[in-house]
Length: 197
Length: 155
Image (cartoon, rainbow over all chains, first blue to last red; front, side, top):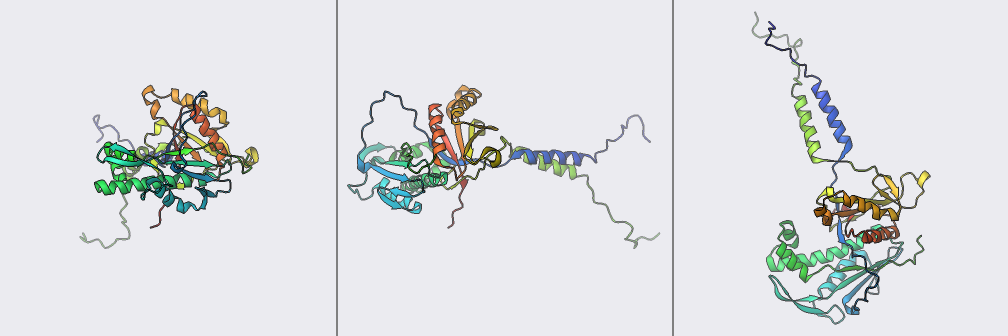
């Protein structure tokens, strides 16, 4: 039966074992988690002989302070984290042209024409003893204020959310919306009053 | 010759295992494609905080990681939060050289795209995080990302 032309068959029953071994190896040594996070841009280091920056008017600054007990002081008032987004939104947009809230200047923006853009700056200062959890929550709430405003604006103008333009990479529209609500979060040097080491 | 063999107990048909290797190989390729190699062994406690306004980090090759948190082995290293770069503990001063070595490993065109991901434990105090951020500013590594988990929003 077994002639010269018929080579002996290779036993393939151990193939499954080999494949299982490889599979287990890859299961153990690899991870699947995608990296998610809040993206920020740090300010570049300042040269020592830098002239003093021009003072920003008090009405244009939204002061957020976090102490070492993770308590929040916003514009001189104690506040809960849950209320921060609304307060920040009102400050950034200044819908009723309140004299205590930021001033506005006319700016030309693509798609929108001449728009009044508020000169808002959010100043965030934390203590050395503030917990990282709290810091991220505050950053998150502030980012949410901006995102919600941008979404509302995009909805009003284009009928689609800002997130939609981000996902579809419609750069011109994203740029225009960002120009009207630029994210300006300035972080002051942290204080050390809470007794952290 | 009986056409209908009623003696069924004798002949239980065997399940064919010939396709088993194929199935396992399929699984194997799935895992090979969808996962990445584990980068470091964590030596610190890492319970990242939760946030909603988060973005995915795009290119994993262009991300450097800095881990901050209390050491896992408190008997040896104590409980003060420490910085971990790659597989070892480091000081604040080591951050700048670390970023510079990482920078020299990538293409010149890709240097502006380099992102530093800060993986910080939620219970860490901000002091050490601020120190690291100041070092990153000095190293001109300005693009950072605070690593967080996604918060499930209750509607």
